[in-house]
Amino acid sequence: MSPEPSWTATISIRLEEAEVADWLARALAPEAAREVPRATASIDHSVPNIVRISLEARDTGAARAALNTYLGWVHLTLETVRAARTPRAGGVPPPS
Picture (cartoon, one colour):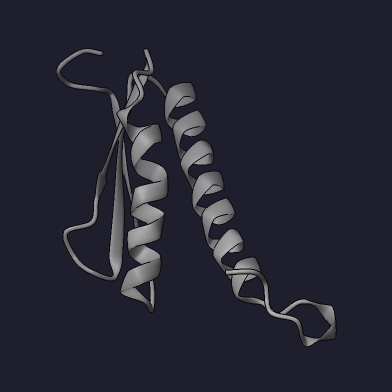
């Protein structure tokens, strides 16, 4: 990618629990480390309850795709945490 990408975006997610923010940052880190030709991402978790995703893309299509992808992964991760914490039918908690 060129030194100065055409499009940038930052997604900041503030969570109530620092532990959940840590899980989210760790879940996204392998994806941000991957090489993608038209976009790059970095994850910042220097503030305990905040995960910041910075995206750089060459064009609008790559920016849209990167935003949609990362928002989907954030949603998936947070829904997984919610589901894992929700008691099952019959009052049986999920396995630990």
